[in-house]
Image (spheres, rainbow, N blue to C red):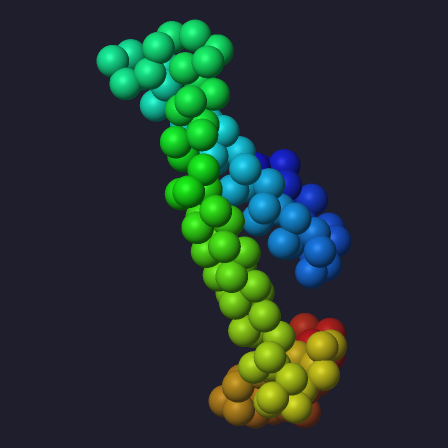
Length: 118
């Protein structure tokens, strides 16, 4: 999961984000159901058939987990984009609050070299 997150920093397209959310759901399902099968020995037999039975018992929950993960991933990543477009700002525009904007303009008038880079 950490690897998926670090690859998203370099190229975060919609398909990659949703694919990572789907991969996270699948990994969680596989690991958590395996842990249930391995830890609670009285629920399922310690055989391959018992493991498959454990995974089958978790399938109804898996469907809802995927739906929720994909929905909330889309909502959390789309909300800033939608709000940004509604505000009418371009992607590359830097947002500086008015008090800081006045500070930078004032220091540029004084000839401070650090303010010219901003």
